[in-house]
Length: 412
Image (cartoon, rainbow, N blue to C red; front, side, top):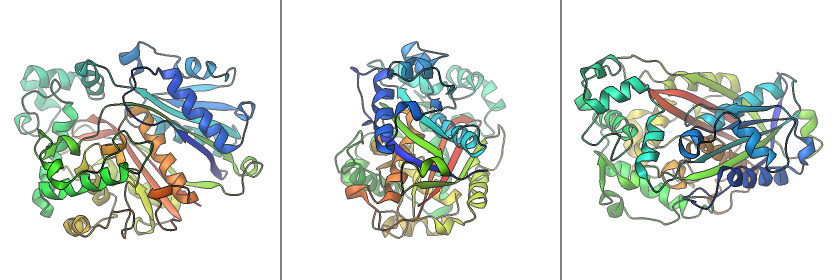
């Protein structure tokens, strides 16, 4: 494999934009990445565009890359439409990285976008709910005993009243796993509220975040119950957004920049349907592959963006990655280890919990943050002198596991 570099990144603000369509989101993020890279549209040899649910939300299917990119003057080149639930754009990045590394292309555009917000919340929840086995979802919503074929625990312990209607079914699944971790490591709802406070503090200084207001511990705890121990301010908001990256071969990158960010590892994995061990999950299985590819260990990561669709997920993913010892999790939270100026900075962007989670854009949004951290251009969110950064982006649910997982490790 050839060395692959990121030479440009761009993104929109994540939020609820009824006045913006998918062409607007792709144009804005892609043009910012192209400008950041210092290239012209003619330099792009191929494009990989990730999105998850535009067909359900907007009616646009099948040729999403061609429709959105041609509207901004990019056409004729090979375009790849990539769909992999919440990991869609990080999967697109993985495919683009593989193509450049293999010598198929020298310069490619990666874009992730999603138009997820609608005034009809049920429409958004149903779109999110399609990222599960639909037979399982139908069994859940109907109260059928068939649920037991898909979930190796009693369903009433997982799915509460209103699941899939008043909230995404994902929230109940996250809550179930979180309660297991609470019992094992002595974590409390207040610990997770402290993580949410940290996330909102970071989001308040991120111009791309959907929520840009710091909050107190009491505000988080009293923000409304979703599915215990989750409160509303611990859960990622529904929204729209776009994010993009330009990646090149080493030789091509040298034509445009003397400060590339190198892709040291790009790994993609899928979940498995049935497991009786909730700690045997896709993060714990894929993480070691990423570290092995990069030739480093978890202890070498200076800054990370993890998939925190809920605030507890942030510390849980750090445990599963081997970055935080489980028994030390309460200490990490209480003593601020994950703060921007802490010993192990995590989600300096504010994470999904406050930056927002426009699912197809999320993976590239994480990459945008880590590239800027390694460049030293993250502004008020800047971590002190990071050399190695990582992104962790999961998508969908298969049984009690995530259905897809893409991880990337970057070095400056």
